[in-house]
Image: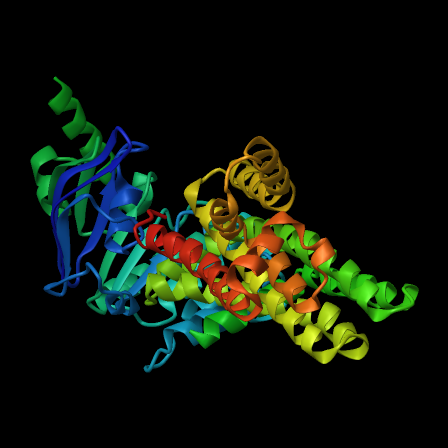
Length: 236
Length: 255
C-alpha cells in the first residue's frame, strides 16, 4: 500500500534519512522503533508530504505522492505533539477538520465518545492539558475511517485508562484490515498490537521483520527482550 | 479555500488585536477631522497614519501571527489540501481582516468628511499598503524559523521603509546635487512602497509643497495621470512579488 523507495533526507549537514526502503501492506500493524533522532518522525512526515525528501520516491497505492495531495484523505495522522490554534475550542477544531476534509462516508466516533469529548467541546485549546490534546489528536486521526493510520508516539502523555482505550481501538482497526504505522519507545506497550517491526538507526532501516520471525529467532516471548537480544548480538 | 479563509478570519477576530486596531484607527481619524477646521488638514494627518501606523501594525501582527500558526499550518499540511491553498488562504484571511479594519476605522470618517475622490484614493492606497506589508511579513517570516529573528527582520524593514528611506534619499540628493539624478530618484521611489503611496496620495491632493523630492520628480517626469498609473502598478508589484516569493519557499518547506 505504501512503498518507500530509497528516500534520503538531509537537514543541512545532518543526514536524517539515508536511502530508506520500506514496504507496508494492508492489514499490517508496523512498529517503527529506534533511538531518539534516528529519523522515525522524519520518515513519517515524508509519507505525509510534510517533509520533502531530497532523493527517492514514495508510492501510495502505486502512485507517487509527489505533487499529489488527495491521497492524504486516506490517512489518519496523530502527531507526536498535537498543537492546535489556541483560540479555537475542541468543537471548532473538530468541526474545521471535518469541514476541510469533506468526508463522504460515515464518521468513526468511538474514541470521541470514549474520551468523553462531547462534554468538553467548549474548552479552548490553549487551556487543555497535554493528555487532552493527545485525545483530540487521536479522535481526529480515527474520525474519517482512513485506510492508513499513522500514529507518532500515540500513548505518550495519555492516562493509563485512555491509553488502554486507544490500544483497543488500534487492535479493532487492525482487524478491519487497515494499515497501521506506530512509532513508540515503550516496547512493552506494543506486545499485543503489532505484527511487524522496523528498527531504524541513524537514518537507515536496520531490520524489518514480522513479530513471529523475531520471536523465533531470539527465543524470547516479549518484544522488548527480543529487540535487546538482537541489538546486543549485533554489537558483539 | 473559502472555508479555510473563514476559519482564519474567525481566529483573527477572536484575537481582539484587530478590533483594538480598528477602534484606534477610528479614534485617530475622527479626531483628526474634528480637531482641524478644514478637511484637507485632517486628510494630511490621516496620510501620516496611513504611512506609518498601518504598515507597522500590518507587518508586526502578520509576522507574529504566522509564527504562532506554525502548528495550525502543520495540521493543515497533514490534511488533504494543497500547500498553495493553505498559504494563499492565510494571506487572503489576514489581508481581508486588516483591509476591513482599515476601511471601518479610516474609510468611514474619510467618506464623511473628505472630498469623495480623495476618500476613494486614500482608502484604496491604504488597503494596498496594508497588503504590501502583509506580503513582506509573509516573506520575512518564512525566511527564518526563529521567531525573534523574523520579527526583528520585519521591524527593520518597516523602519527602513518608513523612516530610513527618506534619510537615504536626502543624503543622496545632497551628495549628488550636481549630477542629473532625476531618473535615479524615480527609480529610488519605486523601491519603497511607502514613498509610492505618499506620491500617489499627494498627486491626488495636489499639495506639491508636501510632496518631497521624489514626488516632485515623479510628477514632473510622468505628468499627473501617467505618474498615478505607474505608481499604482508599482505598488501592486510590491504586493505580488514578496508574496509569490514566500509561496515558492513555502511549497518546498519542511514542516
